[in-house]
Image (tube, rainbow, N blue to C red; front, side):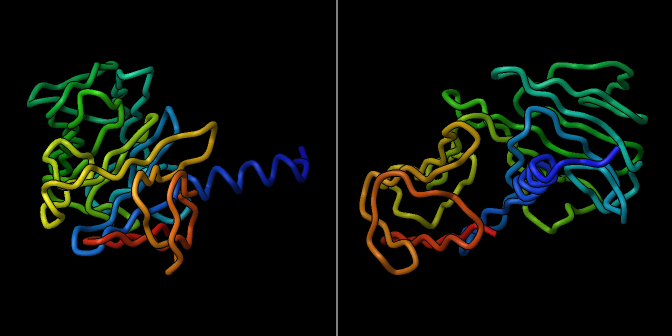
Length: 210
């Protein structure tokens, strides 16, 4: 069945959203996954996985679904949670260790008590594709800053500075700049759209969106 132009544009927008990457200079890269349900699997040509992993893992290894502040892991291959084999959906908790197969392990964390956004990091063999340091499962906000409970921890930032916050407004994401920042060299404050190509600089940091 043929799709309409609006359906095509919607699918294209979804693809762009799935691949949005936050780069924080001197800290690393973070894939921003803002759908309520994401599939993890092998990063191969034609893969339908939202979060691709280069490693010993199936094309579709598992699904993580978010409902409010809760996350459920649905295994689609041999999976362990904190060393115990699981064969049905399980509630994820802060600092849980997920293992797919024999080698691919990920740490699930929800570092900030006031934000439902979670973080996935590879702690075993394998790497994310595109190559990033972590995946952020975005809820309604995401904190970037020097505090240890930020989703993106930036220890070299001024420890007295407040976190920079990403907030969702409808289907779009914005940096909430409470102080004046430079957007492509021009001063701006308030809500700044987190769109691909953005370059944002503060007194002691710089970041971009790809």
